[in-house]
Image (cartoon, rainbow, N blue to C red):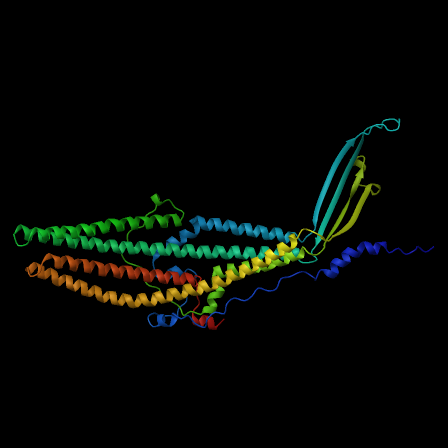
Length: 478
């Protein structure tokens, strides 16, 4: 006897069939717009090429270009001890955990449960009360949300891009911390050089005061000359004390950057400033590919666009599959047997109908966030290009200005020698000596200040390049 055909099993497979047919219909947002087109060359690069070698590469440890072993040692301590870097590393680990959690959401959920229940029921309709009974069960359950519209896959994209942004943030913070440490170290060495200059000036002014005092005791000059000489000496000594305070504060700042107690950290004085590093030939388009802050901003833009897909997927139905199988019996000894087997299979399709506009608002918010991320990304690119241009101009102008200051320093020192000789001969007053000493001190201090600013501009330029750069021949071979 033939059995009549029943369509019910096929209808039961319809949700699964729909999931397979519609799996490729995931909602996706439009691709993010491209970044602003970079210029062919930096405007300030041409001027700098006339005063420095450019056919060089910047290593990963870019601070080694300053050729200062003490700075190299401090940079090694920075990566280990800086607490801001430690906090950012924890953020990266958190973002990695979120990515793994999002990735696991596409897989079915499996669980196993077991239990034992003993119960008794009251008598009904005048019958006899039944005795207590025991029910033991062992069940396995599975559930799976089918990613019809890409809500889960876009969620993975969001988490993945956020993780990439966190890694880029860590690299950007490390680069910023390295540049800040280098800046503090250069300022400290400039303070050392300033202290050495002031110590020499104090000694010279003390000799001038002794000479003036002797001439006053001999009745050659008036007491006003002695008072002017003492005033000049005390003024330089006051500058020396102020510079010592600045030097101590810079040393404290370096200690904190390294994660050390300021009271247990010290750097020996070193009056010689580090060398000015050569600057590479710059390619603006390459800058956009290696700056970590640009990479972080770009990753956040990608995450924002993926979030649009997550929000839009809420407008479409969701499909969930479920299954369970197990055993239930009155005792554990006979639990696992065919008569006690129970199972169930099911599918549910849930379609949103009315939510008061929440889904539309969430979609609008995601699109607004994507536009904001795009604007932030473009602004980051523009700022990066500006930083390079600023420091290229600064390096060029400081180089020209330093040559003028050196010439002025030589003139001021020669003038001081002549005025001191004239004062000893009695042909000029001490007012000329005081003016010449002030001019010589100011000229040498200006040279030190310019050298410090020149080194600082080179440090910021290397940092603006992303902390590494290939030589032109290496670029051509890529």
